[in-house]
Image 1 (spheres, rainbow, N blue to C red):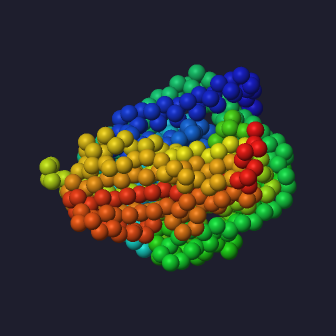
Image 2 (cartoon, rainbow, N blue to C red; image 1 turned 180 degrees about the vertical axis):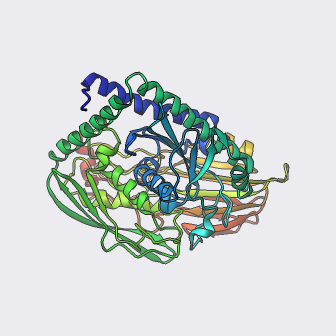
Image 3 (tube, rainbow, N blue to C red; image 1 turned 60 degrees about the vertical axis):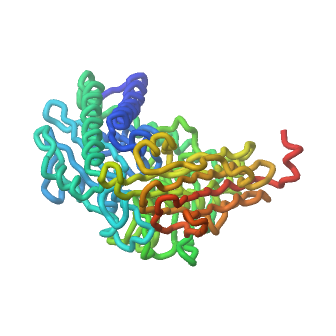
Length: 532
């Protein structure tokens, strides 16, 4: 029987689902224990309909939300293969990147929601846990060559049965973390966020009934699909190609792309991209698809929802065994962080001639990851910390790039210096913009950041960045941004240059200095005085 729906109800439910995912995120962040989630907001939430299609997502972390469709479908399919049928009172956990779609630090929790005994949908969240074991504090090692070195691997498992968290599984997770209290607190915050999402989803669906809710979900996705195709029809048709590079020791790894635009959608092909590497730079398919989704979404009106209706307009071809679709057990932690950024850059580069009024110059092109840890001499217990550092945004058509910001695949916040100095044996020496590091042009690139601190105890440090050799490119005569730099100033006055992907040990009095890249410029510099 066909259920009739009206436009007003469709709009109310559509925005209600988005709001529920936003409220879940607020709950998760405010309940979390770790600064990585509480301060940086490194988490995302989503809602699936009974057909396991994404119908509601908040605009949180692009690499999370773009990978949800792949990761959640993979997880539910895995459970079915194992004979697990969704049941009331259960919740599932997974972090295996080759299933969940990002990297091991991102732990996903999924809760099936039932209305009068029938499946209504699913609420889910993904949060970056600061430490899940592995070679180094914060788990993300620039020297990892296989997944097993990056931490504890969780296939889809029940973490909650009959409304109770499994204490043995929770204990296993804590036993494999350098910061077990933070792991426990953050997981409980994730559980609470899903339970809140369940209540809110039932609040939307119960008054209208299951069949009407299903019909409205169909209408929401069909509407999004139609609007997306209408917007594609306004873009030029054709196929464009480009190549950009990732840095690995002395090698430059090509990321090649072919982008085809038409009124039917977008096809993105990574044929010719470098084979997978013995490095964490590999990006699982969920990450690659997330980066493609983000890049294409930025070409369309911001009001267009991120859901399955939009997702089905994009076809991604990523050859198996490459750095954009590796074969297990390739290490993948940095693919989530760095390769995702380069995928966005190379798509923008490919489309820059076709869409000059929409495409920016290259931004700083890295999450500039910093992983720290050790033993706190005052408390006598292990600690671990993870953060990302902003840089210069590429110049935009008609305006300068923004300085000192996170760009593209990350949307996290700055960790306040006061928080870091309070919790960890660190003393900050500087945190400021690197003036003049943005590329020159009619429109200038944004400036990068310098962030430096001195260790007050022995600190194990890993850095994982990019754009130290391949500078962020400019467009139409604009200059590239200045490259990134990673330095250590030892307490005896010696200076050491670190690689963009490197590890070292800081002794008391040693200072780590991170300088992030500036964005590229657009247009000839001499035209700057004439603009406006």
